[in-house]
Image (cartoon, rainbow, N blue to C red; front, side):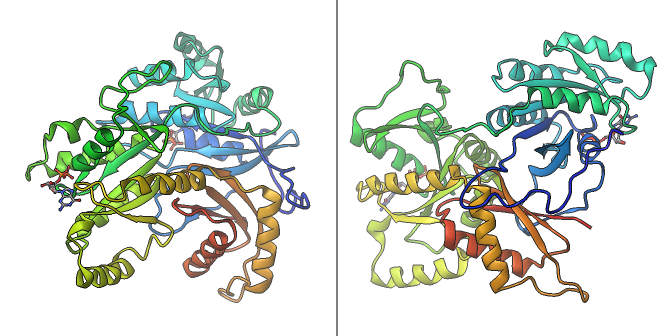
Amino acid sequence: SDEADWQIGDFGDDGEGGDAVAMPTVAIVGRPNVGKSTLVNRILGRREAVVEDIPGVTRDRVSYAAVWSGRRFLVQDTGGWEPDAKGMGQAIARQAEFAMNTADAVVLVVDATVGATATDEAVARVLRRSKTPVLLAANKVDDERVESEAAALWSLGLGEPRSVSAAHGRGAGDLLDAILEVLPETPRDFGQPAGPRRVALVGKPNVGKSSLLNKLTDSDRAVVDNVAGTTVDPVDELVELGGRLWNFVDTAGLRKRVNTASGHEYYASLRTRAAIDAAEVAVLLIDASEPITEQDQRVLTMIVEAGRSLVIAFNKWDLVDEDRRLQLDKEIDRDLARVPWARRVNISASTGRSVQKLVPQLDTALDSWDKRISTGQLNGWLKDIIAGTPPPVRGGRQPKVMFATQAATRPPTFVLFTTGFLEAGYRRFLERKLREQFGFDGSPVRINVRVRE
Ligand code: GDP
Ligand code: GDP
């Protein structure tokens, strides 16, 4: 049969701190409607129940555990996520880029009945550069008559198109065999990426973003425009801070002061989103001399939903007196309660006060964002927590948490396998405990719950 299956408890306990069950990841990418979710369900044997996410956290990438031919691996699904038509080509190219940087193998799914579209070609171009193995799945080949259309996909330059019918199962076993052939036994070690870390300076208009950029570049004189071996977009700026280079992304708008007038708010917000997407860590500037606003909150939401690490910089500290300071503390308690993990720093972009203090905070946030907890450590911790505070009984049943694994970093993403629904309060409790034990200061953490009925 083409059905993959996995068993609860099958993952075993790999003992003290080891990572014996760390599983390699296969990422499934492609345009909407080519059949990615159907393929994921096929790989999983369609035994999986609905994913429950922590409220307020967007579901963009979710990993599932699968077994084929006795080998365990994770399948990373991007199917639930649909970019709007306008930015689609770019969004999917980004998705593919992310996949090849984080997964151990990538499957590009193309709809053979439609043929290669311009978007498919753009994604294939990105994937042809990949060092990560890439397989091309020609989907919707429900019967032999469609085979010739599948063959036409050789034109994408990704090798042999593997015909499959995700909906009916035809060819799924062969595709899985091909995946396992290229998939390494253990996840690769991503380590630190080469090149300067990417930082976005974001915040509402007039909060001091361009002043801060100017201060950072002036104070260090060593503004580098052209460093051999680094690729920096013309809109980016390399800045030396704390003896290292940092890539401040998408700074063109900050320099030229374009589109900051009111009425361009829509564009300002698109620009903010693009900067956050391009960055690894976002510095959210908040005007400390004024009350925290809805607009500050909206930018914060964008950062958290994009899964970027975060440093909050309270700017214009030179204008803050004792009264304002007390007031601000109250606002922080009230308005920033959802990001208790965020690192904060008080600065003045105009005087230059404390701007160097950003560096250790950026480092902490990025370390957390990159951090991986071994499966052994994670499950050891989980066992203790659950023994101490079991999940509340619901409808007369007590859900059991069987196993947890860290499916991804950047941001750290955990998958809990359970036998029943976990209430939001209990999931928040688990996140709080997870942070107490392992840190993750400065980074959002995602916890997905997989219910095994
Ligand atoms: P996604 O947006 O890429 O995740 O695509 P879905 O998995 O949601 O599938 C999009 C549509 O294509 C759905 O109506 C599926 O039923 C259909 N579909 C998926 N796989 C196949 C297939 O192998 N053959 C046919 N005929 N339809 C399929
Ligand atoms: P942007 O729109 O976020 O890029 O903000 P700007 O950098 O243009 O700053 C908006 C205004 O706030 C300007 O008049 C700056 O001089 C002022 N400003 C920026 N940083 C500070 C600061 O730390 N202290 C004070 N007092 N004013 C500042």
